[in-house]
Image (cartoon, rainbow, N blue to C red; front, side):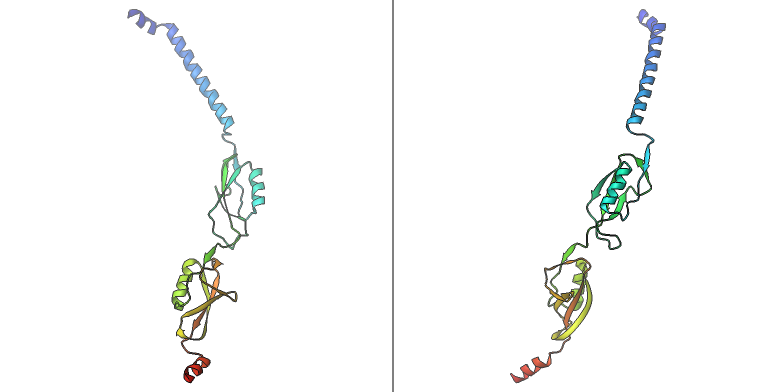
Length: 195
């Protein structure tokens, strides 16, 4: 036991502990320098502005900045941007990021997605307009014809052509509703009177 306490106070132990401490410090410093070099610590690049660029131009800008990109899917068509151009990016333009950082891109689709025309025939004009708005369509105008059902939708048109429930139209399309004005046409009256 006495020898053990003498060993703890000996110069040999103190020298070995000092050498071990120096070795730990040197190895830690070398590891940090290696990590700095391999992770490009302190080497930042500016994220380019990709807004409204085509996909081809975006790829060139990303590659010249030594960055990577990933395209995100869910995008609604924005008529203020060219088709297939960049709508959004994350991180935003001007941010400083490490080389090889991934930039997340949202691309403007070629147009509005198509929606299904609801069953609006034999429905009141007010209800038909609400049903159309609910799916993303709109009423361009209402035209009245001589039919007994006042404000009842008899048929609908898109760009002059008849549309049926279940047809697919681009979202935000404007529909013309053909509704009854509440009166019977003169030919129908003559026919009814003759019977």
